[in-house]
Image (cartoon, rainbow, N blue to C red; front, top):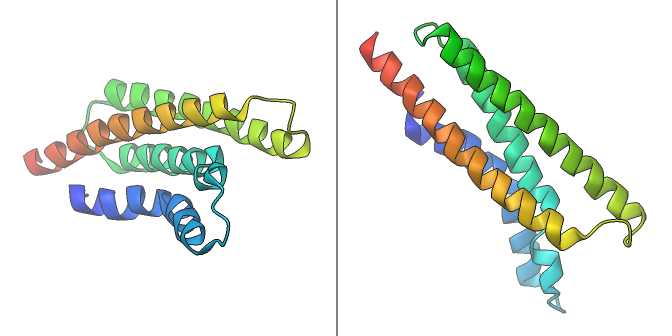
Length: 133
């Protein structure tokens, strides 16, 4: 996998909900800034990035097994965290006073950015291992 492919197929695809929300925001008659950023968009990005991590690591036959296993475990833990955040967002739509959405938004953005950095390190290692082999 090349870095360009990772960026196009993983990051851009993961950003589709955020891009779509931005496009919708541009044509709204009344601009509500709360509409522009939704935790679910960042949660979806994080889910896609971490699923890609597992896929890339499982495909690779060159990297050290323990190293791959540790990265897969971290990705699974992150998937669980994103699934919990996803559930919180669903429940918050049922009862607006149940959770602090701004805290969930900030947390999901931070974890998503961390996941992208983590994924970049994995993809970089995969690319280097493919060059060596």
